Image (cartoon, rainbow, N blue to C red):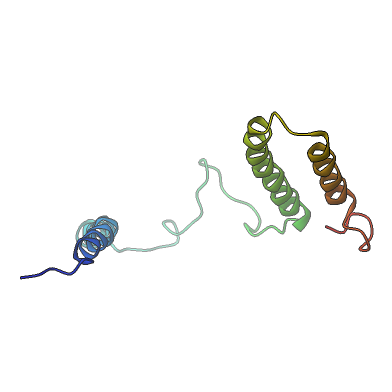
Length: 119
């Protein structure tokens, strides 16, 4: 019998899906078998550090906080990728350094013709 070249890949895929779904299924079966299903107001109440909650749990946050977080992540990842680049190119010529400097200035001020801080 000749097996397909993708047979081992299929076996690994089934094993990976089974490895992920087996604990979920076992937890569901355990909960159905051993957990009493008696919901009431006390069980469904919000509990946090033993204190009675006051007010609504849904609070609106300004979107600027998320914007600052995304900008931080962008610059953080950029710094992570720029450090190995800078270390590996120690013998750059003056023209290459000038080109990198011009690129950074265009990036910082915005591309020409689109106004400052356009990027």
